[in-house]
Structure formats: structure tokens, C-alpha cells
Amino acid sequence: MISLGISVGHDMGAVLIKDGEVLVGISEERITRVKSYGGYQHQMPEKSMRYCVESAGISFDDVDRFIYSTTELPDEYGEQFESITGVNRGRLEFMPHHLAHAFSTFYSSGFEDAAVLVVDASGSEIAPDSKANAWFPQKDPNELQENVRLAEAVTIYNFKKDSYEESYKKWIKLSTDGYKGGGVSVGIMYGTGALQLVYDPSNNSWQSGKLMGLASYADREFVDSFPDFIEILENDVFIPNGQVPSDGINYLSDFQSRANIAGIYQREQERLLMYFTKKASEVVDSQNICVAGGSFLNCNSNELIEKSDLFENKYYLPSSDDSGIPLGCAWFGQIVEGNLPTGKYLKPYLGREYSNQEAINDFFESDIPDIQFQEFVNWENLLDYVSQCLVENKVVGWFQGGSETGPRALGNRSILANPSSPWVERYINSEIKNREWYRPFAPSVLEEHRKEIFDLDCFSPYMLITTKVKEEWRGKIPGVTHIDHTSRYQSVTKEMNERYHSLISAFYEKTGIPLLLNTSFNGKGEPIVESPADAIKSFYVNNIHVLVINNIVITRR
Image (cartoon, rainbow, N blue to C red; front, side):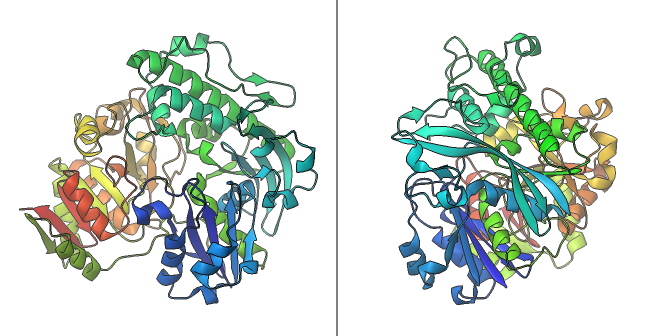
């Protein structure tokens, strides 16, 4: 049984699952090369849909169920669907946004049961002509004020392997001219802070990840003494609409002032996610929790959840943001047909693989002067060469296997460097990534050595939890130790990624350091590279020293 999950809107894409096994998935931005592609364009992810069926060697006629989700209105995609697939529009099924998030994380976790917590900016809406209305019959859109809509803000589900029920839901009111009473969502609050403090007028963007990095530089006494912004009530929370009181501080203000206010937003984000995690433990009887929604890309908040005793086992999805929606849609199509997951833990490498011949063809078609390639027949020789490049402080583009789902590079589409070099963080930020100097880089660590280096005892394969670096290691790995002595590590095992594990091991043998600096393989304002052609272009334009595609090494002459 084959299901194709589809998301429409920003971060849209598609995922294909067959008989309980995830075969392939991609975000549209990876193909179009336009970051966050799809927002408010009211179009289906045609390139992603074709990528999935072509990679699996099937046609749209072979797909048994097509399930999609969108938060954008009007929601009319039947004609587009028929044009792309040649399949009758009556076979296109809708599911709500938060439920898609929930399916994406629970059926990736390997748990038998779990509380599933979804927190983001907003999900599906109750409004005239919204397909979500049928899923929430207790909410009548005709009873709402004119121009007012209800949107999902927080949902908690009780999941079993073959069933689920909704245990809690928080709605917010939206309208065409702003937010209408009752407060806003966690994601809207944090996004407000990003817009206020890290707005980039050059591309009209305000990335929440920048706010999290900035908050690490906040004065702790200032943050601790600042009055609460959100209000925790007896059975609810109230999140005011607008900025925290900040005397006009904005993205043009001095660094420390911005960092201090960023610290307030981060503090309130952490309070909120811990509140809802506790709520989940109260309304669902399980020792397991799975989380999803863009709010759970906040690694500092995840650390608090991990350290809490509210649940024995926790699962954080690599594509917690909306890039994970098609995964949830595809799982919904499987589960309703009785097909349970075949694996225990999601391997995040959902993209298709590229052959050496494709890489060589792209090399010659790039027509870039003064570059050369060498194909290594022996993998051990390749590891020796690449690890030596890293020892010599060369920056390496590492391209292997299928691309990762979600916004984190996890060893298949990565830029790698020596973490022991004190200057490497600013060098990559300024010379390669062309981004703010204060943004940290993460380490990929051999899981068998992780406990030696980091305080938190937690297997973290998706780079979604922050913890303190042990004092004796801070001076050894300054390139991945943030200003507050923290690090957002990725646990690497042979089972999860054998090639990447072998490279880190080769570096460890030469240096005694069992980790590498790892950041996503992309330049400023562009998505993570997908194809060899993308990698070759990024390698050349962004001044990366060495590029490795499979067992092919590309360098400058």
C-alpha cells in the first residue's frame, strides 16, 4: 500500500511511504533553490511530488492514497492535483495541520504509546469554507464574529500504535486585520521577537534560530529580574499580542540591548513549553512524549524538557517545523489502512541518492574553471585524505547518500571543519556562510564518546538538544562551544550513518577529538544543497576548500 503525503504552503513538500516504510521525501525549496518556497502561492508542490514517485520508480497511478494539509485559505487544490497527477480530485484527502504534525512525530519515534504535544504559530483554521471545519464539528464558523477565524495553537493527543484521541486543544483568534483577543500563540510570540530583534531588511526575513543564538548573550541578571510577560493562569496561559516591553529596542539597536531582550523572549518560550509539557503529563497517561511544531526546533527549551522528570522517554522530530507535515500526511494514509512502521526510529535521510556518474556529469556541466576531481577507489584512503584536510583546518563540503529531512544537516549535506580551531567559528560565519558572527555551530560526536564531553546524558541523533560542554573540553573544542558554554550536539552511530561515523572516527584517530564541527551545506539565503550540481556551485561560490561527493573529491587547481 502506497501513500503520498503532501503539504501546501511555506516549507511545502512531499513524502512517499510504502507498506510502513518511508521511501523518499523532499521539501520543495531543495529543488526550486528558493528558501521556504511555497508560502501563500496557493500551489501544490509539483516538483516534490514528481521527485518522490520518480525516485521510487512508480507513477501517480500506483499511489493508493493522497493526503494533504494546508493552513492557507482558500483551500482549493483539486484542479491542480488533477493536472499534476492525472488522478481524479476526489481521491485527494485533507487532514488538519496539528494532526499531521502529531502523526509525523509519533510514527517516527518507535514508541508503543505516547502523549503527543504540538506547539507552533498556528495550525488549521475554523472559518467559512475551511476543510478543517468537518474535523471539529463542535466549532461552528457561522457563530464567529465577522472576519474572525479560529486557529490551532496547541494540541495534545493520546496516541497508541493503532489509534489516537485529542486530549487538549488551545485555539487563538485571527482576523484579516490582526489578532483578536485571547492572546496569541507560542510561535507568534517568538516570531514577534525575531521580527523585532533580528529582522534582515535585505531579504525581508526574521529567522527564529537567530533569536535563540542572540539570547545566549543576554545579561542573566537582567533576564532574571525582568517581569513575566506571559501570564500562567489556573488552567490556561495568556500570551499578550505584541512585543515585550523594551523601550523601543529593535533590530537597529546596539547588540547588548538586543541580546537582553532576546533573552526575555527565550525565557518566556521556555516557560511556555514546560507548561504545556506538564499539561501533557496531566492529560495523558504515558511515560513517553513526542513533540512537533516549529517551537520544538528551540534546542534550549528541549533541554529543559529532557532534564525534567515529567516523562521517562522523549522524542524530538528532525522535521518538527512544517517540512514534517507531508511525513505526517503520508503516515496517516498508512495507519488508516493498518500499515504500521517497519522500523523503530526514523533515519532522517529521506532524499534520493545520486550516483558517481551523475556527480561527474554535473561537474563537467558546471563549466567552472580551475577545479578538478579525483575518484577514490578505496574508502579508507578517502577517509585518510579527508580527515587530514580537516586536521589541516580546511573546510570540507560533505555530500553523501540522501538529503536530510528538516532544517538540520546531519552528515549527508554538511559543511565540516576542525572544532579545535578557535577562529573557525567566525571564519565560517563571515567567509563561507556570510551570516551573523554570534551564531554558533554544532558538533557531530561519536555516540560512544558523547558522555565524556557533554553534561546531558541523552542520545540526540537530530541535533535538537542543547547542553553544557564539560569544563575540561571547552578549551579543546572552542569552535563548537558557545558563549554560554553550551553546545547543540548530534549523536552519530554506525547504525544511523555509517559513512559519517567512519569519517569522524578517522579524525578522532589523528587528533583525539571524537567530533567535528557540522553546519548545513548552503550559502547565505539558500536552502541546503540537494543535488551534486547544487553542491558544486555552493562549493565554488562560498569558498569551501574541499568538496566530497560519495567517493569523489573536488578541489581547486
